[in-house]
Amino acid sequence: MSFGVRRMKIFVDTADLDEIRELASWGIIDGVTTNPTLVAKSGRSFKEVIDEIFDIVDGPISLEAMSEIAEDMVKEAKDIVSTIPEKHRKNITIKIPMTPEGLKAVKVLNKQGIQTNVTLIFSANQALLAAKAGATFVSPFIGRLDDIGQEGMEIIEEIMDIFTNYDIDTQVIVASIRHPIHVIQAARLGAHIATIPPGIIRKMVKHSLTDVGIERFLKDWKKIKK
Ligand code: G3P
Image (cartoon, rainbow, N blue to C red):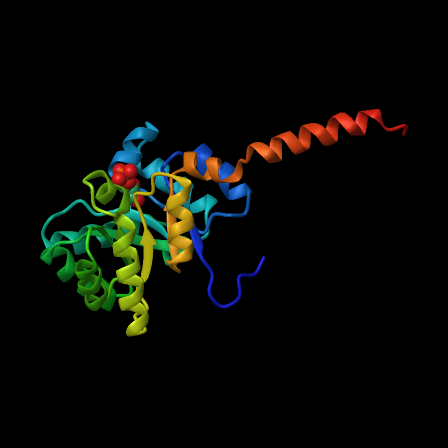
């Protein structure tokens, strides 16, 4: 299906390989975001998990760099790149935390053609700085803002306004999504990407009236003389 020139992408926010395989088979997954918490939850080794994700999804796959100093982040990113088979390298995206050291690393990695996803963004100012440094993606965590009583989606609106004003080509990944309404709001604001946990994608596909409708059709189909 085509969305025209502008196309909202859906990434799945998980390291659960069965879920990634199933949802990819629905034809709706454009990329994957992982973090150490998600990989730990999968119960498999980091290497095992990432090798398989790259085989399943042909789109940006975000992997977190855990160093805190720019130089180390750059080294870690390059080490990650070297472990991924050549054919998948175009999809590697290194998650870099939103800190001054992170910005320095983004600047270097951008020059070296390595995609970055600046993560743990909680304000439009942080997104603006990450974009200026050369981030491929920025990830504002809206659910965690909601958790502390701040309307997370407001910063998505601000970021989209700012990026549109200046034709900034950094893409906005709406992250820390907690329910299907977040996805609708992100889409209405024109966010480039929503990264969504599998459980929420499963809620998005369901509607009780769809189930009732199927049940009724099946019942009536049985009454028809074939
Ligand atoms: O993509 C970011 C996400 O993994 C964080 O989500 O629910 O831990 O705030 P959450």
